[in-house]
Amino acid sequence: MQLLVEAKRLAPKGSVVEIIDWSELSIYNGDLEVEPPKSIIDFKNAIAACDAIVIATPEYNFSIPGALKNDIDWASRPLGTTNSFSSKAYERWARRLSWF
Image (tube, rainbow, N blue to C red; front, side, top):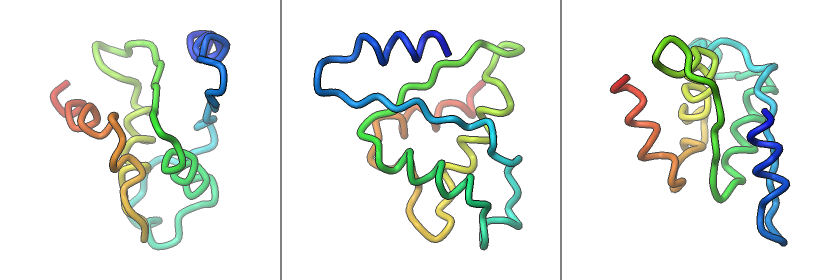
């Protein structure tokens, strides 16, 4: 979190940096795709509204934490709309996560 707070502080004047809290997201469940919890909809909308995404997380067992993978799964699901990552620079990187 400290890295993101510092990135926000150092962002160029006029930039808007929002730190998205993902602590309330439930574990991905395909059965909830029809009626996802409000926390999931809010998370997807926050990502969709961004021009860019920066993810800062500690390494966990030579990979990314399971909670982050879970959040990427939620954000990448259409849930009646498009993938929240579409047209983001992050989109190409997200596909590489499966290589780990």
